[in-house]
Length: 117
Image (cartoon, rainbow, N blue to C red; front, top):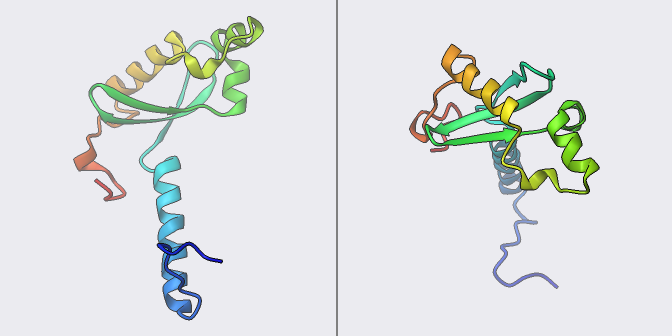
């Protein structure tokens, strides 16, 4: 049984290929599009960062970065959830430094290198 609103393109392999390619492109864009690596100047944790406006910064932490960051380790040790912390203040300062130095582009949605905005 299929969902009535979901089209079935089983008879159209060209369309299925195009949908798969678009899905892969979307996944890449949302997970890493326009992101720059930055290293914390204190603990040397590396995260991916994207500025989408002067007031919005996307940060993707990986397991190694979470393990290196003393602030995150302290939150975990206290039984807290690091996802509830906006970010480590030292990482935030490193990101601000990266923006000031041009390591992280001051990027607005209109300048998205993937052309999605």
